[in-house]
Length: 102
Image 1 (cartoon, helix red, strand yellow):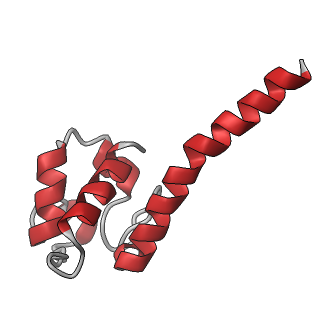
Image 2 (spheres, rainbow, N blue to C red):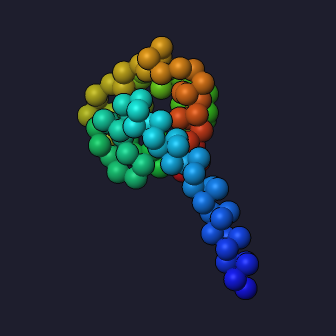
């Protein structure tokens, strides 16, 4: 029984480690100035984005090029600025996968 519990703890740590790394990337990239995982800040909560039906390509495009009008009821019309090239394309893809994984 002890081994089963230990294995479960280790497995959950392995799953949580990438998520924490991705949250750290979001912090370093400046995303948390307007977003959080589960609460509206200026922009929508990422869990709301994940459950909205937006696909990976659309999220990547919005992070890269910015956007306006997708979440007007939440943002009051405040646009999302573009994050490319300040954030690399590879990191933008990681951020999109992080959001979709919530």
